[in-house]
Length: 217
Length: 186
Image (tube, rainbow over all chains, first blue to last red; front, side):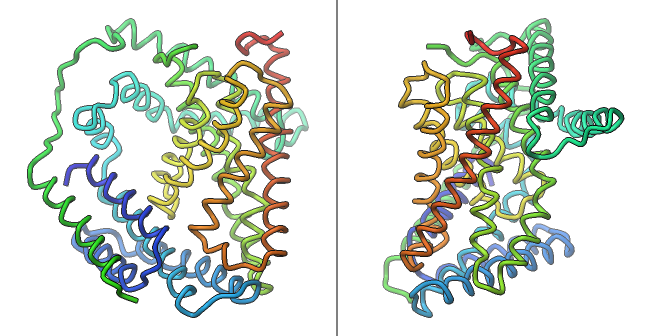
């Protein structure tokens, strides 16, 4: 399925599920996501992780709601299953979508301005360098006997200076390679947006509406 | 009013990634805290205590880049980073990120993107708290809690957002201002 449409579908369903209280639809969504993840060959370890962690948080939330609030069993079941809907649908999306294809699709299909698409890509490709930089800053401070914590302004200060430096350099590099903001572009790789994708997206949404509003528990 | 250019876009993305990487470290803290509080039915408190850390990218990006939409974009991209780094909450992370960013954005918009001082940060902390709390009322079923417990959750959340999104952001931007790297700061 087209990545942009898939993203829109996942977010729309997550939003709808947040505002409605129909646990049967939640369970249906969980089962469908699980099946699709099996079909998509998601690793067992990842699936296990995606089950154990929300199991803990959903149980803790339900337990807390039961202790500290006034609720019905129905509401608790809705909240419990809702957490799994979020996790499985999110897992389905991230495990079956390549960030690069998603960005290309957002640019070509969803008409995201190319400066955003390429700006994001440029920065995301720095990810390993960024992780290394945080480690370097911490190590450099340690050598001078300073321990930098999550709440130390110094840590952020150095990080932000590095970020400013790199964004200047990257922007200059892109300009010198001929990148012009707002100029028309051709695409080496095109992401297809087929009629099938629209149908799949539309039918899924209609099914969810039907499920939510025909009075299921 | 300033428009978005490629440099700002890269800067806001790198900032979001940096925040994502730094916050990655506190995820185990969150899990431990939640586990410690869970038996007493207080698990949401873990979320409230640490929320300020997660929403920090919004005020920080808004304060540094000073273009309408910077806070929202910074926080939202932080959520994207978290999602692809292997955060488990998926689509709901993206929605939360957008909600948190918008919360901070309202604070900056109320000052018409002109004043960047204490008042802005306090206002931002307040709007962030209110908007994210409204979202949790719906999403996490907070509306079912007793009123007293809700007040406690709200107060803890505001303190957390104020400490990290307000005080810490101010300390960081003070350092940046002294280094003369912020736009139009006297």
